[in-house]
Amino acid sequence: MNHSPTEAEAEAAAPLHYLSKEEAAAIETELLSDYRFGKQQLIEICGQACAIAIVKAFPLTSMAKRQPTVLVVCGPDQNGCIGLVCARHLRIFEYEPTIFYPKRSPHSMHQDFTVQCEKMDIPFLSYLPTEVQLINDAYNLVVDAIAGPETDLTNLREPYTGILVTLKQVKIPIASLDMPSGWQMEGDNTSGINPEVLVSLMAPKKCAASFSGKHFLAGRFLPFDIQRKYELNLPEYPGTEFLVEL
Amino acid sequence: MNHSPTEAEAEAAAPLHYLSKEEAAAIETELLSDYRFGKQQLIEICGQACAIAIVKAFPLTSMAKRQPTVLVVCGPDQNGCIGLVCARHLRIFEYEPTIFYPKRSPHSMHQDFTVQCEKMDIPFLSYLPTEVQLINDAYNLVVDAIAGPETDLTNLREPYTGILVTLKQVKIPIASLDMPSGWQMEGDNTSGINPEVLVSLMAPKKCAASFSGKHFLAGRFLPFDIQRKYELNLPEYPGTEFLVEL
Image (cartoon, rainbow over the protein chains, first blue to last red):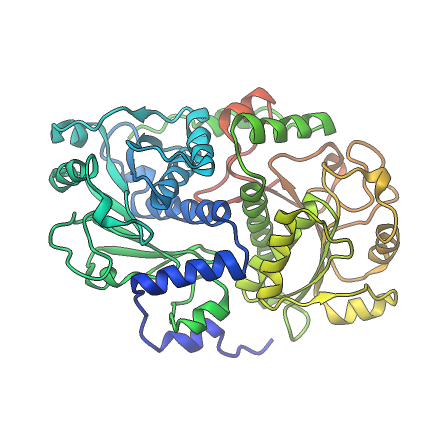
């Protein structure tokens, strides 16, 4: 077979596009309305890829503590559900996740994702210790699944402002899913946390342009037509992998 | 960190358990009712893993034909939907799937999976050529997604009996998802096809015990409690992979 440049290769020369809030919303609407993807389907596949990213960045063999503990902090919306799915797959990968999910969504699909974790005996914290040393001592890392592009950040009051204060002080590494907590999607990041790892979902958001840590892209299901329409210029994913490092 | 035997390693010594029809149904019921997994979620994750299995067994670089064409034949039930998802992920992996889905389910979730493929410009055949040479010439392989444990085989009349006759004659390799067409779940396989590859989902079914081709297990999401309860004795999946060869 002749090797002609693949679609991904041909586009790789152009610079990666960072999504505005409007573009992220438009892509999600197109996936759900035109392509008729289900939210459950997209959340599952994104959360699974996030778990793989955590394993890549923090392999079991690299854990500083005796037990491979991970604290997963879940927000009230979709990003929180991706965190729940990530925790469940981390459990399957033989990590020991603990979930802090302070404001549980009344949405039945979100409840389903919660039950899946509960039934797999993943512990849920009823509160987050304000004494940061307790978190540093108990966990190897924190997964920050508090907010994504769908989150109305102006409504993120307590308990999230308190959580943000705590996460800014922890000394163990943080991996953020799609958007680091406290970052504005397109603007100021100065009041946010400083994660070691960021997993961008489908395409990186504008705020990610200033991220200097380990940056993964996940979401290898995005139709080629959407990639072209929004001129995403995504890099090629290797082999059958669901992640590529940016 | 000390390396103590993992749960999977500890169980690996015991022989793999092949599921009866009742056991397969009981596990599915438990996943849906107790764990509150969604069908959409399970089908997506199984179909994705099947696509990875196809890539492993038939890499792009091994294709005999100039174009990496794959014919995916989808049955009327859940196995057919897994085939649709598999086809979509194969397209993302830069294969060129064509789908034959003669009896489309009226179930809205199944229609959603269909639209996802249509919107990604995957062609659908309106009929299967009875002249087998046309299939041998046009495609590198066939994915058989006609029937799974959920299928009432006594109801699989036309067009599936005709399709079975055709598939028995094709010379290109066939990869079957969960159950090869024409095989009884627990019994006689003599009137069925003879696939090169079988991808068992979650755990192999009784009929798979007599399969001598390349055999993958997929479905790395099955809760450990269910694995123990049904004494599945699954082998350990390597790293973050979603497949293990049996």
